[in-house]
Length: 313
Image (cartoon, one colour):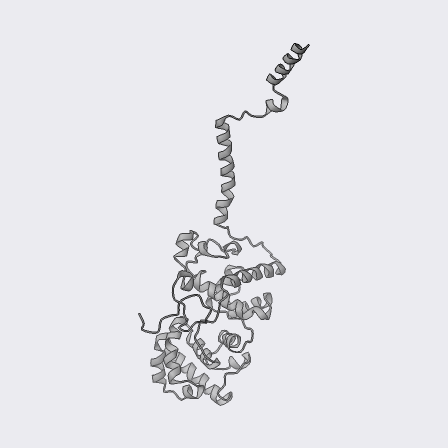
């Protein structure tokens, strides 16, 4: 009896069950192959995550979806550039107005290197209105288009003296009446000298909002209207700084540094520029690339280096 039971147990042990018969044998080679397959499968998504694809904006995107997408980009930029600020040196509304007029067709750096001598010679609208044109032209020559800019500065200074008691007005409708002052310049002055919210649509701002598919408009006034409809007024001035900062440092016109862009996963135009992280990092400008900024006198919380004075090595 005992012998019979032992034989049955032995037979059962040697006879594979249905489940074990269907399962593949775990040979060393099979185990290695299985491990390789798992590693390959798990590493592919991680590798793709390092190189984000362009965000696909659906055709006929609703206004609500666009608003949510745009506001998320703004929040991300706020984390990247918590120190975003106007990049023109100024101490009062008059200096900011003059510097902004001079910034047309040149860099803020060149303006900042030029204005110290200009404001030393003409510290008030009354002084500037009485300037000898040829002398002013020589002072602002480094900014380019110095004859046209001299004409604008003399005209706006005289208007401030004669029509506004020597003070820069704090209303857009008054500012745009001044010679050489358009909506962009007016919004810069209002937002940064008077605390009145304004959207600054310069070349960087326009380029980026089109890349992000917020609008297809090319006209600055229409771009301003579209963006104003997306964001609350309280965000307008800082949004402008963040977008312009990003355009100058990372999202360049000809060769954006896509591979080093912190908002690449949110960008529908990702891939227009350099996507290799190492090569992209070499394209970064100003403090992002470890170089001086544009201001000779930057705010205390600015993480970069001050710009050099005109003629400095």
